[in-house]
Amino acid sequence: MRSWKGVEMKSIRWLCMGLILLMLSGCGAGRPEPETLQVSAAASLTEAFTDIGIHFEEVNPGVDVVFNFASSSTLRTQLLEGAPVDVFASANWEQMDLAVEGGGVAPDAVIIFATNRLAIVLPADNPARIASEEDLAQPGLRLVLAAPEVPAGAYALQSITLMGDRYGSAFVDAVNANIVSLEDSVRQVLTKVQLGEADAGIVYISDGFAAPDLILIPIPDVFNLVAEYPIAVTQGSVQAVLAQAFVDFVASPEGRAHLARWGFGAAP
Image (cartoon, rainbow, N blue to C red):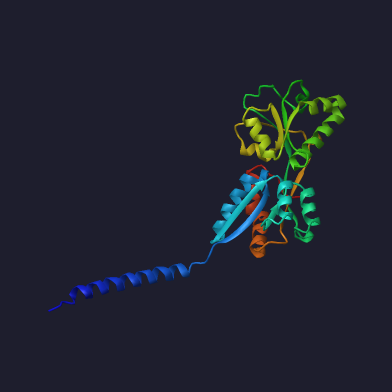
């Protein structure tokens, strides 16, 4: 006579496995897909925006902020060429204005959220014995700047011109003769100095906060410039509401506190 006991036990096991799989699939189906926010931000914002992104995600569960840090000119080009960007934060008005002219950003969407100033950055051992901006003209000095199309590079050249008003045209000629490299971003200037490939560089004060192993000499106000940082939701954003929430968070007291910790000044 045939026994059905083994068949019954197998059926019960299969039934239990089916119920478990059904429960698991039900749990997964109820979990919302994470929302991704694409933020293109100037390289000098790397540390500050990384902190801001972490806290924005904490207060917005299910949101994944993805950053693209590079020179403002590179980011503006990417935006206008169709790269997926929800928020664009530039280190100067020129690149933001070009983004507006190219249709990537609406003019009324732009706000200023921070400011920055220039400083001379030196290796920790300061081999050239630089003590002030006047020493940038000493013969044989290896000076590195960001390229002129990069905001930090444009500001640096303007600063050198202002120094020439006091020290003379020969000073400007000597400083320009000392420039050994023009980098694609301000962070590459910092890297050159860190690697010992330059005796000095001109960066933002905030960059010094990101490299505490280096010496930072703020450029005097009379030769310095205030860099204003504009930010905006892009015209092509697929997360416009979430993108505006991020912009608002950056401009909030909490966002400003994060920026201040990394050496940025307040918006005017």
